[in-house]
Image (cartoon, rainbow, N blue to C red; front, side, top):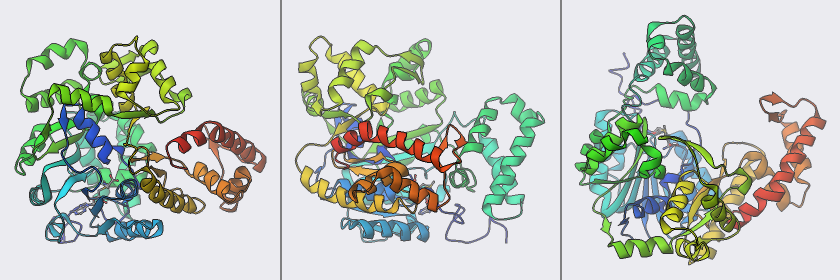
Length: 510
Ligand SMILES: C[S@@+](CC[C@H](N)C(=O)[O-])C[C@H]1O[C@@H](n2cnc3c(N)ncnc32)[C@H](O)[C@@H]1O
């Protein structure tokens, strides 16, 4: 039977191989609400006792971390790959979470399940990888299950950024279908063919020179990710207006990008293109224009089924009450960045004082304003938003309910770090301060575990790695001898003890 006629539960989506364990900050309620607030709008819901749904949750790490961070809310998630759901349920059981349900339903089946109405419906990395029929099923689900005032997060590959590379996806899938072996071998054969075509100056690659660097990026990426990204039958990059029209069927309107840097025009649109952008006034057309002016290839959109409006005064008041903190080591903060609009040197005299204050405190925008009297509110606001978009700052949840959140995230994080001796898969922990996940790698998790056992962190980590025949890799070079490994682990521990540990403590992760 040909693939086109095969009736299978996977409906053309790759199911032979499991997906990676991703976590995406943009799916968290605090992030969605902040991105919405920046537009002068308000997500109208009970911020403790809400309902949240993730469609195509993969291994379930995002939903599980969020369920730990928001213990009074109820979480529901589905992914039709039963293997993913077995893993997700294992995580929930191991961590003792009681406010989350995982199902192995397809989108169509999930529509018929007895579920509450949701304040949030989120879907990451699925909408442009499935058939039109399945996109419709998602829209029907949203239509039926989203509350008035509810938010939808949807991410997808978009045009025009995929214009040159879309045939390369076709080529990868085409070659993989023709190749023998398992799906990993098929993927490797497809990548080999692309590499040969580039080497032999095949016109498609010569005339689209951008593809070479894209291929080089692919060849370094996790094969599991590549397989899910490129080998799906229904892969299709979408135009923003097309998605907006589909969402309109569920009475949704576009409100904001959850990639908040994209909300700041002067870091997104190059100065010479700004007049073209400014000519467009209709919000949906403006967003479509932005994609053309920036050659966008991936979008993270927030749509609402009716959204709370704020007056100018209310908007200012809510922004002023929003708390922030620094979530990286100040040493890691860079003041030069390449934005979509081009390279920019940020004014250190504006950014650095904010970093200094937020490195050991949580302050509202209003409190920062009171401390930084020489700074205009506009400069302060822009600096906070840009540094939040860059991942240096993060909004902070209100103090109410902190102890309850911490009790649950502690249990969740304990379970995750207990897995670190056996696996590197779970590389995010839950922060009750941020209401979001934070990346903590396997070695750092092993250090945390050793500390809880009152053992030497370096010896503990090295014994585990050595017993599994694993070695540290530094700048692409494997450290061969035990002495080299232990010496490197000592350095890593020192760095962890002096800067990461205090940060993780401040974020309530420890
Ligand atoms: C690229 S993965 C993304 C997973 C997760 N959202 C993430 O970003 O880590 C897409 C997921 O969608 C699931 N999926 C594909 N088609 C589906 C359908 N019709 N119903 C439910 N899940 C589906 C797959 O099993 C896969 O886990």
